[in-house]
Structure formats: structure tokens, C-alpha cells
Image (cartoon, rainbow, N blue to C red):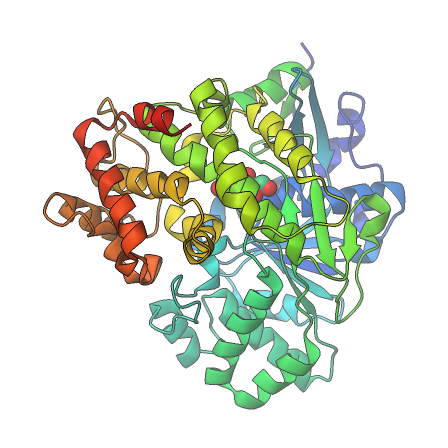
Length: 494
Ligand code: CS2
């Protein structure tokens, strides 16, 4: 057994004999990109592409400064600070091959809860040319049913009153953009990398709504100067487990406190719309296109929606992971029929993409037995995800009088899941959702009012008033509340 080395810059020369490590000079990196929300996905995706660019072509002005805004980000801040920004990315192939690699593109990390001024100053620094975001669907602070900015949020109210000591992403963005304007510096690009349709437009709309309340002249400047490219991002990145950490130590003698695992597939399609320059990401496989909308719609309505279909039904049935769902033929057929019958008719043609082949490839990716993506990750924050992944499709199918049954069953299953917080055998489920309590309270009333769950207007808008949907929903929720044997009902539909 090799001697164990902690992952940090001073050990890289020795570790490089065991595992691919950055060969470029990390001392020269300048954080041209500041990234808010350094979760697993950022580390398997944007930081991975940036590392590849540094490795192959060198682009020292495009290092990444990670930013955590919340107390919950302290752990990643501590780990990455200790590890000098280094971490291992473990790519897991379907045939069992495992390919780990040390990534070095994150050159700095700041924590907003500790020092807001430092974060604002870094974002306002002339070297910063892009601020990118993976703050999750819920982080954009819009009301899911109206799509408008939610001014009721307490932290937003705090930020409006204390512009120099912000807590939310919007407070940090406006404070730093104000500094840039006052110093006559060019604006940065705000690049959203979240799973939201028209994510750049959404970031723009939300930031402008907030800025207008704070300072209309600043809002006008932001509107004129900041670019907000839309993008489609894709790489399945499950939650890191203790076994992943142990794997690196046992096989490579590396002590990495927080590696990231992911599938081999990766895709990033971005609109070429930047205020202040950008890395030449096209050299490492990123696609720059004039209009990303058809790509993002396809991905959100097939991949992310497909995940939610398997996740919610799988959780209720008792499947622990997405690949376990894909070993169950009923789930496979249900997923494909949902994609063909309810999702595909809402999609536009995407140039160069064969939708059937895309759906086949999704099935293969979901079935990767080494990824073991937990259904609890997929179901987490469903209240922020489902309106984006499924309800828009449902609305369009209702308007066009197309099939709605497959999505309706998911909503009925989600109600039961939120009410009982257990699977069909009564085994407790781990539920992670900012709206967990509201969902639970609404779902609990189903026995006396079968429409109670879908009457939550902030999520469902006026869907409960749609007769066709309400009828189908009441029928399905009635069945599920009888015995929760969701698979039995899926079988009758395929
Ligand atoms: C998943 C996504 O969160 C979810 O529900 O569907 O995290 C998905 O794995 C990524 O978008 C893949 O690109």
C-alpha cells in the first residue's frame, strides 16, 4: 500500500505518479470567473471544462474563484481551502471502469457569511469578467406559478435595507455591479448554469426586478451593460459517498475529503453573448450557439423530467437509486412512454439532434450501474423542480388536448409521498425540500378534500380548476391512497 498523501498543492508532484494531476502552473491562475454555488455539479462541469482548457491550451486569466454565500457552504469552503482548491473528479463508466483525475481550476474560495465585503470586492475586481451561478432552481427567488420576483422573502428585504451587507445572491450582484459602474469598469457577464428554461433570461429578469427596487439608475446600467447568456448544462453528478472517499484512499493513497463522482457524458451549450470576454471553451468541446432554447427545453423536459418521473415513483415503490428503477422493466416502459407521449409532442426540432437517439441515450445514462444516483437526490427540492420540469409540459398538453395521465400520476404520487413521507411499505423516506412543511400540510388534507394538494396556487397556479386534469388527478390520488402500490397503476397504463 502506498503511503497516504493529503490532497494539496505541495503533494501534487508526488501524487502525479499515481493519478492525473494538473500539469499547468496553478500559481499563475487569476480568477477571471467568480462562481457562486460550488456544489458537485459545478465541480464536475464548468470547473472540469476550465481545467481541460488550462491543461491543453493554458488560459491563466480564467481561473475560478469559488464563492459560498450561506453558512451551509462552510464545509466546502473549509475543504477546498485546506486542499488549495484541489479535488478529485471520479468518472464512473457503465462498464465498471473508473477514471479519477485531480482538477485544479479553482484557485481561490471566499465565504460571504464571513466577509461580505471581500466577496463584493472580488466580484468588482477588474480581473473578474464572468460571474457564474449554480444556485439551484429554488435560488432564483421567483414565485413558481407567476414567475415574478418574490419580494416577501426575508433575506431579500434585509438586502434591500442593507445594500452593503448582503445575504442573497441579488444583494451581492447589485453591490458589486454598483462598484464597477462607479469605478467606470466594464460589467461582468452573469452566466447562469442552472436547470431552468431560459436560465439567462430568468437571471436577468430577477436581478433587474431586485435592482429596480434598490436603485433605478443602477438597474438601467445593468440592463444596458450586463450580458446574460442562456445555457444548457448536462452531466449527472450523484452525491459523494463515504465509499468514494475510501476508494481514493485505498486505491491511490489519496486523502481527499470531498471528491466528486460523475458519469462520462458531458454537454454544455451556451449562447455566445458575453459582456467582457470569455474563455475559449469551444476548444474543449463546449458548443456556442446563437439560440440555446431548443436544447434546454429538450434537456429539461426529457432528462430532468425523466429523472423526476423515476425518482418520485421509485421512492414510493422502494427503489433506492435511478439505476435500480432502470432494472425494473415497468419503470423503463413507463419512462419511455412518458417521454414519447407527453414530453416529445411539446418539443421543437433541434438541429442535428435525433430525438429518438437522444431518448435512447438517456435510458443508457440512467441505467449506468456505477452511478447509483439516489432517488432522494432527484426528489430533493421537487417543489422548485417539478414546476419547471413537468408542469409546463402538462399545461401545454392540456391546451392541446393531448395525453396528461403520466404526469398526473407523478403529481398524485408526490402528494402521497409528501403526506406519508414513507414508501409503500411504510419505510420512512428522506425528504429534502424548502417547502416540506407546506407540502405535508396540504397533502394531509387529501382525505377530506381530494384536490387540496393541487390547490396550492404558488405551485400549481390554477390547474386545480381545470376540469380534465382535476378529474384525472382525483381518480389517481384515490387509487394511490388505497394501497400506494404505484407500480400496479403504472402497469395498467403502459
Ligand atoms: C437532476 C439533475 O436534480 C435533478 O433532479 O435531474 O441534477 C441532473 O442530474 C442534471 O441536470 C444532469 O445534467
